[in-house]
Image: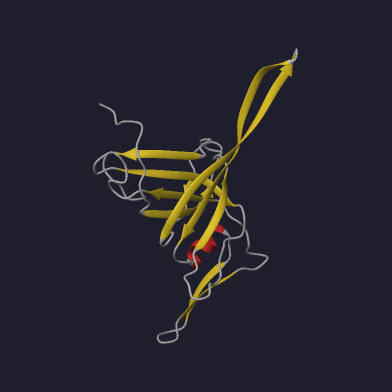
Length: 188
């Protein structure tokens, strides 16, 4: 018997991004190494639909709708230099030895490439109706829509966030996938 096709959705346990390295029209996309989005808090998907109505004879004759954009907004509790490099570009470098080690991210006009990337989020086990199961949401090809929210907050934690727009993959035409698993599975 197949799994039910509806569920409640509770919480988010993990999210990872992976740079999109190739997307051939004939073949399969390839992605770089998974990068953890640390302290994931929210993963919100929205979209835009363009609606055209045809009128004539003083009445509505037809309506046509088309998806014109899918967008994701993500908030996460910890800022990651590796995430910044994957979604904006730039270079992360490590230097020094203990006790004077440093790691830094540098963005220049030449390396601010806004590369495409994949984003996947998952509920905790039992975060869906299926006992022991989970739900994965994958946006296969994203590009940053605005500069990430970074910085500081007086006497408070600063939550990092970013918004990205989805495009369909050239190889499969996929924008978004939602998968319910009977047995919870890690992002792979």
